[in-house]
Amino acid sequence: MVPDTPQIEDVLSGQDGLFSTPGSGRRLMVMSTIDPGAVQDLAARATSKGWCYVDCPVGRTGDDARNGTSMFMLGGTEADKAAVGPVLDIIGTLTIDCGDVGHGMAIKITNNFLSTAGAVLTAEALRLAEHFGVTAETALSVINETIASNGHAKIHFPNKVLAGDVSPGFAVKHARKDINIANAVMKREGFPSFSAPGILAAYDAALASGHGDNDWSDLYNVILEEKDSES
Image (tube, rainbow, N blue to C red; front, side, top):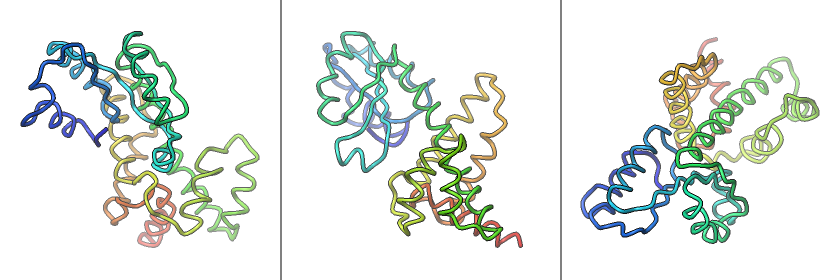
């Protein structure tokens, strides 16, 4: 579990990398969030060297990882998924069988597209309410009783940035990486994406203003900084 494809390549094909030894039927489980297109290439290379490839990106937060309550999106052969299942049961609480190799990553990128968008929308919505004199707490009390509610509004923002804590549960720089992957994949596959470029721009603004290592709920502060800079 490393940040992105270049780091995976280093682990697998760098000096003394994993692919320098025969797989002999052993299982390689990649738990990073990367472009789904890269998964098929990695899996083919692993197979050619005798390794069984298991696709297993991780859901939930850093706190969940520390507490052993992560969830996993599992893709691979039935035999490989059965073999790694007991390990995942130890380090998390929920494993969802997503199908074949690559399917786990496909749903992870889909999920993170929604969650990275949700963080931007929640930050913008709260700042819009505050502009008119409504407190964030009051705004959330309404939002969370309607269809507009989301995990950021219900759980994350109240417990992180609105509580004065921007230590990274999930860092802005990692969220930016994930929305960039989603944006690139949607373009490549010919899907219209009306929102992804704007969401990516919000994370780019956060990075440019020095918020990259902070929790993604810190977009709440970025929105106000951007507003003030344009006033």
